[in-house]
Amino acid sequence: MNAVRATLLSACVLLSTGGAAHAQTRPPPDIAQPGTPVPTSPLFPSSTVGDLLTRHLNLMVSVGEEVESRYQESLRLIQKEPEAVRLLQDAYAKTVETEYFLRWQLVYTLASLNQREALSGLVRIALSTIPAERGGSDEFFTTGQESNIRVAAVDGLASLAKLGVTEAGSYLLRLSQHSDLSIRQRAVRGYLAAGSDYDARAKLLQANLPTSDHWLITLRVTEVRGVAHPDDTPEDMRPRKRESDDESPIAR
Image (tube, rainbow, N blue to C red; front, side, top):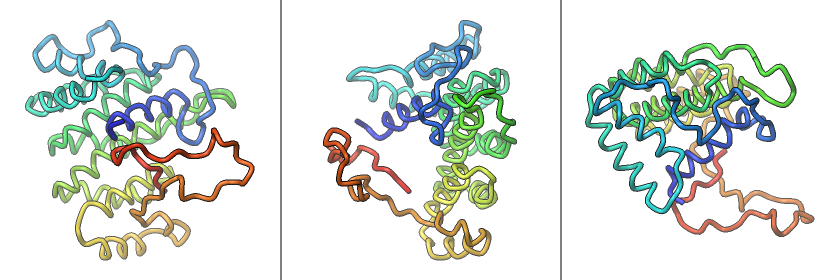
C-alpha cells in the first residue's frame, strides 16, 4: 500500500474513533464517518476548481486498484489552481464543528498543496484552541478528533518549512510547546526535518522544551517488529514483515 493511502486510511480509523489515544471508541451517529460523501449542500462553488475539490474529497475515501494514481493526479490538478487555497479555507470556515472527518479532509488537502499561500490558514487552524471535551461519555472523545485536525495542519507547516518557508519553521517551534502531546510531537519532528542543520535544531529545541519533553527530539523511526513483545503473544497478533518499502513503519 502506498504511504499516502496508508496515511489516509489510518486517519479514517483515528478520526472515526476520537483519536489515537482512544482507538477503541465509536462516534455517535451525528459525526461525519470515513467514507461519507461530501454534503449535498454546496461545499464549493460550481466551477472548475470547485468540481475538482469535490471530486478530490471523494477520492480520499475511495478504494480500488487505480485510486492512488487518480488521487495523485487530482492533487496535481488542484495544485495548479490558484483559487484552491481560498476555497478550501472558506469551506473549512463554514463546516460545522461536529463534521470532524470532513474538517480533517479539508485541512489535509490544504496541507498537501505545499503552497505558501496556505500558510496563514494552516497557522490559524494549528494554533486554534481545542474545544473542551464534548463527547459526554467515556466512549467517545471529541478532543482526539480536534487534535488530529490540528496535527494535519502542523504537517502542512512542516512541509512548507522543508520547502524553505521561514515563517512555517518559526510556528513549528512555537507549536513544539503546545499542550497537546500529538501536536507537540509532530511540530518537533517537522522542525527537525525542515533543514540539514539537525544538530543546531535539536539544541534549540532542547533549550526551549522542558527536560521531560526531550525524548520528543528525534527523527528516529522504529519498526514495530523491533519492539519487544510478550512471549505468549498469539502468532496471528505478531507484527508481520513489511511487504514493500513504501509501507509506513510505526514512528516514536
